[in-house]
Length: 165
Length: 165
DNA sequence: TTATAGCTTCACAAATTTCTGAAAGAAGCG
DNA sequence: CGCTTCTTTCAGAAATTTGTGAAGCTATAA
Image (cartoon, rainbow over the protein chains, first blue to last red):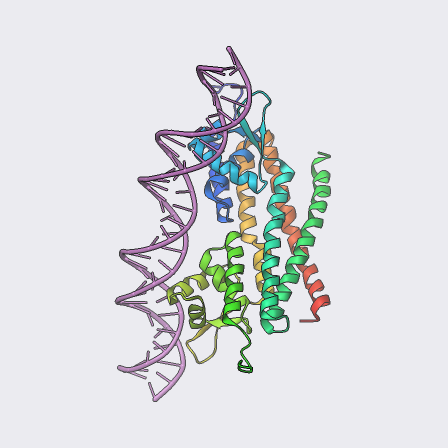
């Protein structure tokens, strides 16, 4: 073989996946750079990369990485950690953590509900439009609760599939 | 009273709700104009409006309405109907229909799954990264199924709340 | 303490997205 | 059959979003 023993990871393959998956995330509403950063983390072996590594792999400036990571941390899709005694920050995707972030999106649902309640109040609960908004509100409240129990079921299901984490 | 007997709907209140709710939709990833159009339909008494009505209420050109509606129809959030014998098109938000559109987003999930499968294949199922992707894939497959059953539960729940549709 | 590696912030340039006006295309109606 | 009314398409203007380079901060290390 001409290949060195380790480092089986073909950067090209990795990149192809990263860009492709990122594209899907973007289509689902995530801004581009956060999408790429997240995909890169997901495809990394350790599940964590430093700012520099991300910048190099994605061919973007430190500033871009910084912005993307800030976004991802804000929506709880990654966590930042700092190896004690190094000013290198590393960003990690925590399996569970981001499923929660993705599915719950609690904040968003809550805000929808608020907007709907406001609408019902100002249009009148006994008008046709008010009734429609009321039903929509009920739907979101239902979903909110369902998602919670779904995540419990997921944890059980996962353990069954992959063994206790 | 100085108010005429009907038409209790204060255009100002309606507009306030429309813009506020649309803003939430936008934040969740919907393009702006589709968001506004959808909110306007949701807040209408009949649940359906014509192109002209939408354009007037939102103060936008027919072209903008056309584009927005095309988008919404494509993702099944509204349906178009044409009163027989009029070239006026009207757009309707069908309660159930759009919940499904919102939650299922089948196409999107499917594409995520495809991208993940591709990643597992090219990174190797027995690498750490491959294992992470495999688990993520399992999560989506799980969610896909759960959403389906959730919608069944919703229909039951709704009937309990509002009576048979 | 000072030097320095590394992250962040900011102003601006580039690319993308979004809306409009104008013209072209359907479909009922006389 | 043409007229009229409505919708769609298209090119371009306007606004927004994204990413960069450079300067500024912070905290480790010497």
